[in-house]
Image (cartoon, one colour):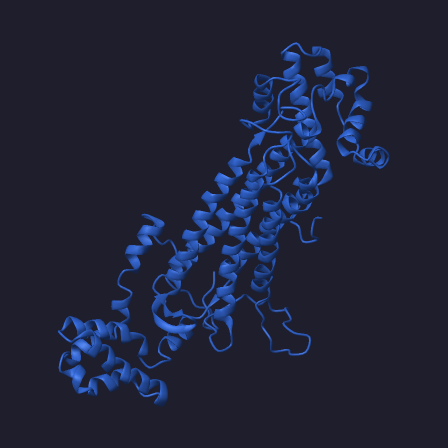
Length: 449
């Protein structure tokens, strides 16, 4: 189930051709290790490597009759090997091949996802330094709170992306295991030592213990990690959507010259990429739930997990690969409007400095409850009348009794609120230095990468 928008690299990993190719790699590694151990003739091992090949069409033709994909695969391969083909799949059970080969596919997929995270991280870092000192209003509960900078917001996303990178590396490593332990995991036909050699040939670690299958807590953890990454991408896209709302319009998803936003309204410039990212994150999270359901299987194994994984592993890695690409492009080309940010920062006529004013009054000896009441009374008047908050408090005798005009002015300083930006950037990015201009403006007033 490969969506039509699949990037070709990730789509290839989950194709039937590559799946059977990885199955064959497991069979070849097994035959070579068995020949080295004297379990099968070396001539058989050489024949399996040299003449072992398959046809997807032939496998599917055989499977229609035998109703078993691994038997159809081994039959197709053995047809090309000749007499020595009887040693193909020697001592193995189906899941020795399927689970071990799946680890190889996941390893390939994870490498692409990590590359996508690296690209996104670079984009976030670049834009964070670009808007490091671009002030904007911070919002809590959707209501204006205190100043931040747009670069600060991007730095938060960058730090989260770094954590997601570490999470995915760990989850991918948890999946980098194979098993050649037989029908119930008891090594009835091949030894743990031989399993170790086979896995080493494939660049995998042997699972310390298994039943007929590698235990599915690994797969659940991996898919849950993909869901966390997808949720972080949704977080970025959702913020873009909120900041693009007409009433806010502090940033805007790039809109191409020939792009159309609506079939009915020619003026529309909709955040369609950001909305798509948010929608697809729901699918990846739902797939993680399906993977959790796969952890509990009957006894040493049943087949209920298999059909699920044929959907959720390809779909989740493909979707996340696509989402990473889209999110990186979204950040790289994002239109940013610092002037509009400043307008919105001043929208409430100074109310966003009420917290600092409260603290300054307390510092000068006012009781906190009294100071809170004085500040709130003036603030509520601004909500009703849209008067200037600073002008009101400058006329308030209770405030003036504790603060001089210069001290009141200092309470309304954006620079004071944002004095720790450089410190926090050093914590997030280390000793990185901005290699980018702090702000670039297009003729329309929008800054973009």
